[in-house]
Length: 136
View (cartoon, rainbow, N blue to C red):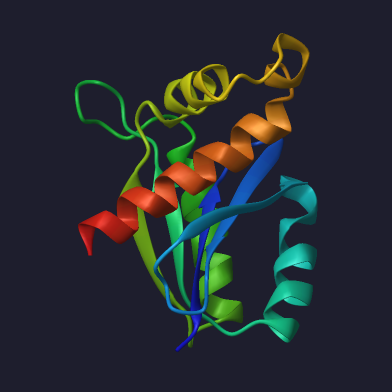
C-alpha cells in the first residue's frame, strides 16, 4: 500500500504532508517553492510509493472556487499526465491557514517561529491530509 501525499498549493510556496505507510497518521513533510514542486515530487516519487495525491481545494465562503483554483487546475493537469497511476483527490481547505496558526499558538510556538510562512503551509498541508483521512 502506498502513502498518501497532500499539498497546500500556493503561487509561491507549496506545503507538503504525507501519511505513514499504513495511511493512518498525517505528518508535515516540507515546504517547497512552487516553481520547484515537480522536481521535488519527481525525486520523492522515486524513493516512496504514493497511491494518492490530495490537493487542497480553496473555496470562498459562498462555496465558489477561489482565484487560485486556475493555477491548481493547471498543476493537476500536468501532474496527471506525468503520473497517471497516482489517484488525485481534492479536499476543502477553507480555514486551514487559520487553524494552522491556532495550532502553533496552542502548541506554545514562539511568535518569531509562527511568522514562518513555509511552516504555516506545511502545517496547512497536514491539516488538509488529516481532514481527507477522516473523510475517507
